[in-house]
Image (cartoon, rainbow, N blue to C red):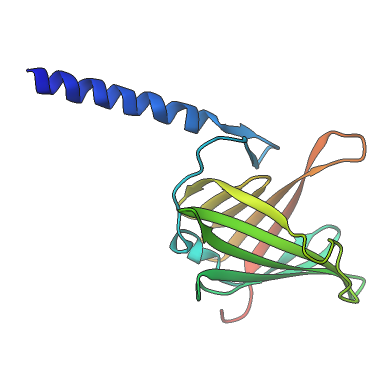
Length: 178
């Protein structure tokens, strides 16, 4: 009897501890979440986002977009993004997803069409994992949603010039034989 009471109280305590972590997922934009400082990040490995691997092509930012992700290898996945407007590259991104402290971190760097970087030499734009489900990954301000076997939607939260939050959306289809 005493043991059941202890087990019951332990189960209630564990459930109560899980609530603040779940509530720490604040909406950032319609399709993105933000990472609240100090909140618990979900456990995840590269295997949880391996579905992202492949060559994706679609539309976004007023042009055609291309995104390629390598399968997990050597402790990371590597991505390459390209925006093409009026038949010419507008800008590029190099991205990585790595395992860090039992969860995932996405890093990226932007480059102009001439490969001159946007960020300072040693700086990256980092997105911490906020939530993970099969075929879905919410990084702080950046969301990947698998849409069937051949579709992918990516949403990026942005701050507009007037200070309000907006969202960029990219709709992709699997491209080629990958």
